Length: 420
Image (cartoon, rainbow, N blue to C red; front, side, top):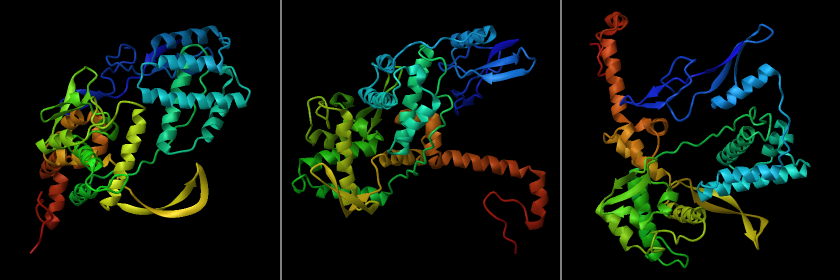
C-alpha cells in the first residue's frame, strides 16, 4: 500500500533562535508545515509487486500529490489536453501580470523566444514539448551564466505552471540539469580606492568634456547614496524624494509593509538636495521610459568614473561599430573591473567590523540572514572572536591537548609556546 508523507527539511535558526530555514517538524506523517513554503511530498510504502517504494512526487501541494496517488493506484493515464503553446504562454503571462515591469519584460522575452523556437520545429501544442526540445532550446542561449540561469528559472516556472494547470501530463523540465554559475568574488573597496573615486568626482566631465558641471554634481550625489546606504544601483536610480526624511533614506519596504531607513551624514543629504533632479518625483530618473534603461545608463556613467579614478583599470579589446554594423577592426580600451555593487560590500564590511550583528545587517540591506552569512560572514569579527574563545575553552580541558602539551609546554591561547 502506498501513502503520502512529507520529507521535512532540516531546520536552521539564527542567533536569536528564530527559524530562518527548513521546518521544525520531524514526523513525516505530519503534513501541516508551519511555513509558507511546505516541505516536499514523497510516496512511500510497498508497490503491487511487493517492492518497497520511496520516491519524490516533485510537488509540495498535497491536493496535487493526492491526485497523483489516486491515478497511480487506478492505473489511469490522463489524456493530453489540446492546449496551444500560444495559449499556455498567454495564460502564464496573465498569472504574472502583477509582477514588476522588469520581471514581466524578462518573462516576455523568454517566452517569445520559446514560441518562435517551437514554431520552427512545427510544434504548436504545449504537450508535444519534450526534454530534448528544451535542451536544444537552451543550447542556443548566449550571454552570462547568471542570465542563462535566470532564463532557465523562468522556463521551469512556465512549465510547472503548465503542469499544475493540466496543460501537460508530464513535466519536461524535471530532469533539466541546473546551470552552474561561477560568480567572481566581490571584494569591497579599499580606503585608497574610495578616496580616489571621490577625488575623481571633482574632475568628472559631462558629454562635452566640461568639468564640475551639473552631471558631476548629480554623479557625486548618486555615489554618496550608494556608499552610505548600501542600496543597489537600480534602487538608487529610482529613489523618490518622498523617501528622504531628515538624515534618513528609505532603503526598502518589508513584506509586512514597514519601511527600513538608513541614517546618513548631513553632507550626503546636502549633496542630494543641491544636485540637479531629473523630475519632481525622483532624484535620478524622469519617471518616463524603462527603469532598467536608466539604470544601465547610470552603470555606464559610474564605469567612466572608476576609470577616471584609476580604480582596478584593465585594458580590453573592443570591436568597432559603424552605422549599427560591427567592423573587424579592434581597438584597445581601458575599463574598470570595479562595479557599483562593491559599495554594498563595503558598507557590509565596515558595519560588521565595527560590531554590527549579522541580523542587523540583513535588516539594513533587505537580505535574509542566510544570504548575509553566505557573502559577508568573513567580515564578522565578533563571530570569529567567539569561535576562537570557544576553541580555547575546549582545549583548556581537553586531555589530549594536555598530554601533547607536556612535550612542548602548556597550551596557551595567545600563541605557540616558546621554550628556553
